[in-house]
Length: 260
Image (cartoon, rainbow, N blue to C red):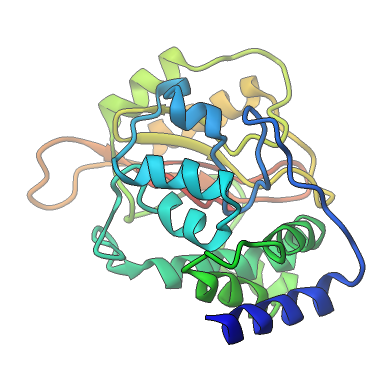
């Protein structure tokens, strides 16, 4: 464990240079917005429709407070119950695969936020038992933007993965704010039952979006991406509006993390 921690610190220090990022002590604010994208306050107080899975919610909060950032990221992926035994059962994807894929996107599109996150992770506690996750995040290689954008098209794109009940998404759209105020560095806009409305990271040269715009885009996703898979028990929906020069990525699905 000591050897692993030394390797992690060396890797992160090389990447971030002498930059020092102070971790926020305000539990209503995100420590960093990439992988620790739920504030302690919203987990503890179940804000904006969030439902949590114990003991992972408590572990997430405790790990952040104790600066065990690898443990916190691992717990984050279990907080809402989408992961069982380290795997997203719906899409047969492991936590490590999901983290690696997201890290590549963050390093490619959001290098400043990625660097800031690594600087925070460099100060993880010696008691952290999941420094392997931090090593994974720090060692990914950026892809060219053109290669990343081949994965998506602009506009609304529907997905067969992470399907949420349409009824939950419809109710989410009724309950969420439609104010013309910018979302800022919040990633989880609103949650209702199985449906999550999320946005990509804030910054990196990408214009922010308002709650009003996110609502309009989510409404289009709900209308265009509703489907009933074989042997389904109800109509479901999953889709997103890819990041482009005009806005952050906007995702409506059952997935409770990511959206990069």
